[in-house]
Each structure stands twice: as structure tokens, then as C-alpha cells.
Length: 365
Image (cartoon, rainbow, N blue to C red; front, top):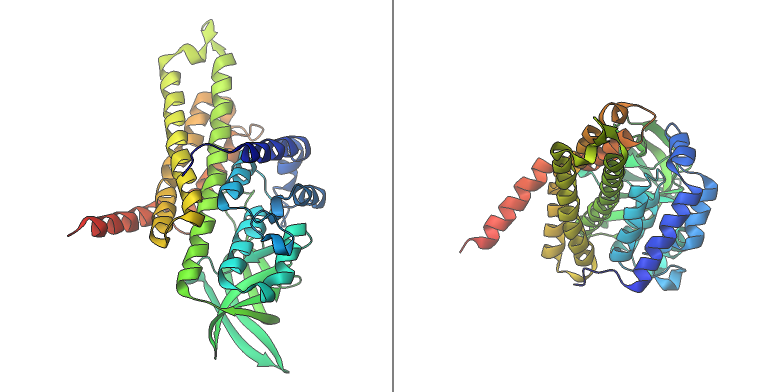
């Protein structure tokens, strides 16, 4: 496993960073979409598609780049640093990983091609098993789905919703045209993350594949790992803002960065970000190249560390002092992004418990 980015990955990072700074800044783009249910601007989404960012994980035969989770992590980190509010994690990571892990090429070809060129936005509705109840039925010769799913990300922006349901052939993956389905926004601390309760009432669905639980678990690991990269970018960005502020803000005739208390806060942030970085890099590599157990352990580690990573946002606000608590400052937006990562699919304690149990079992005779 190489911990350094290749020249191509550096170019991908720099191109994505420039695009987001020019076309999707926090002040002129992110804040304007905080109250938008879809959280996406068509021009910016088209720009990401033109860069190839929406098709990174789509196989080349379907018009994508056929890259790995490492490249996806490079882009995710930059999107997190820019607090990008769009459905990229859902459509460019969760959906293509679902389709490539669970389906054959023919059944998913049209959706994958649409994801790659940006004309189709897809999301998945099975990440949280405990809050999804979908049934399959026949209606006038067509297959339809009924039920409710909570916590579906980016459902208002999506054209296609991927759900799991059981029929006579077993547990299947179904594609539902999500335009026009009943949605109810779910309140969350992070306004850049749009989540919904979806009500399916006889919507036509197309069966794509019969799925295995291990493949579903792998997709969930992929989503956790990619979101960890997004959170890493957010933590890095707010840390950099705080450090630059500490270099410039003066109190008692000197910059506050010269005070030992501020220095300790900055060092704590840096240590946390770099510890998270090593875990995220390993997890991104393991998502494609590692054995299933190694991939899952890497995802568990990344999620178990989420609570610690969220403290970077809190510490940065301490460095900023009173200005960090204001709506006009971006620090609170970064903290909310990190807190939403910490809460995604359960808090860190659950993952720490599972991680400890697995490691203990591994070390037992």
C-alpha cells in the first residue's frame, strides 16, 4: 500500500480543488443551498460530471473512469473541505459501488452510464437496515414496491432510488424511478446533508439482481470509508483556517499563536487530522485491494474515530473565540459536517464495541 499520491491523483486533487474554489465557494454556493431540499446546482453538477468526478467508480465500458476508491477518496476529501452539499457521495460512490458489487453489467448498464455522464443522479435506500421496510408486489403485470425508508440521503435530488426487497427469488435489488415519490425531510444538525423519509406506495420497480448479505455489507463499508474521507477534508480545512487565524489575530500586542494554550490546541487538531488521514488512506486501499475482513476492520476503525475527528471542529471554534460562534463564520458549518459524520449509521461507540470484539476474537487462541 502506497501512502503517497501518484502524479495522476495529485492532478485530480488539484483540479477538483480549483473547480470547487471557482464554481462552488462556501459563501456564494454552499450557503445558498443550505435550505434547498435537493442541495444541488445543475451547473455545478454538470461541471463535476465534465471533470469526470461523477463517473470515477463507473467501469470504463459504461463511460466511466474505472478508477478505485483511492481516487474517489481524493475527490471526497476536497468536497468535504469545500463543504459541498450535493449528492456526490450518493450518486458517485454509493450507487455505482452498489451496482458493480451486486449486479451484472447488463442489468445496470443504463444507470451506470447515466451516473458517469451526470445525467442520472442515484441514491441508495438500504444503508440503515433497521429503518427500511420495503415489500414487492405485482400490480397489473408490473412489479411495484411499497413501504417506508428513513434516512435516505439526497432523495430529493435523485432520479433513481436503489432499494432492497424480498420476492420469490430471494432478496433483490430494485431500481425505482424516484421522481415524484413522497418525501419528508428529516431534520439534522448538518444542513449540507439532505436526508429524507421516503414513502413508496405502489411505485413501479425493476429488479436488477439477487443479492448476498456480504455484498450489501461491503457497500456499507464503502460508504463509511468514502464519508470518512469527506470528513477528513472538512477537519483539515477548518484546522487550516484556525491556524491561519492564530497567525494573524493579535491580543496583548502579539499574535495569539504565540500563546502556549493556542499552540496546544493547534497541535491537538493536527495530531487528530493526521491520525485520521492514515486510517482513511488504509481504508480506501482496503476497499478495493484488501480481504473482506481487512476492509471491514478498516471501515470500523474510521467510523470509531469519528467522534475524535469531530473534536477538531470544536477545537477550531475555541481558537477563533467569539467570532467562531457567529452564523457568518464558516467554522460552525465545518463542525456540523463533522458531527453528521459522527452520527452517520450510529455513533462511534457502537463501532468501537464491534471493533474491540473483533480484535479480541482475532487475538484469542
